[in-house]
Length: 202
Image 1 (cartoon, rainbow, N blue to C red):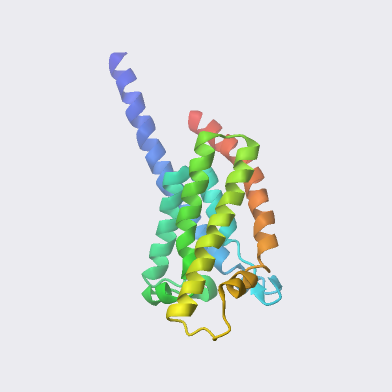
Image 2: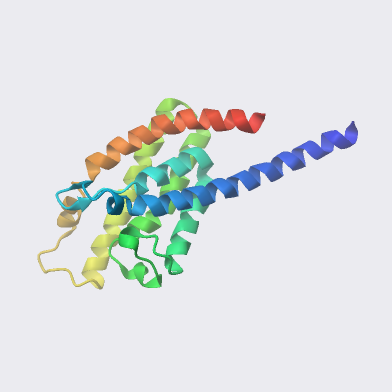
């Protein structure tokens, strides 16, 4: 009886780590699909701004995997793209993507998942899930837009008329979509989190 009792925690810890890595890989794959959703559905665009599901999946990764594995999944996605796999938007990839004005959004996904995970690890109510999702969306926009502005100003040869205000104006078309998807991610994530917790306890 004593031997059995000491073995259970170790087995549970191993399963948690294994499942975390499996789910991390799954969300990295979802990010690859989400980056190029408009390739399969070209009608999904607003004023020429492509609609992707990357922010949605990054938020969902934090909600379902927590801060640690959520960030791991987004890091894996970024690393695969930088290694040369065509997993970024428009099926691009390679280390040269780091100088792209939009690379800040890819980098932000790591922080999005981590911050979202931290919030729901402290409070698991529906309201907290929705708030966490909206905060994650804000993190995505702040990091991504500031990177874009700096990139255009320092190395991407922006027009002289380009300003910080214009950078944010460019982000207005996809904003309603990302807010709506973030709220949906919060509600859906809360329901899925309950299911996952039930399965882990079996």
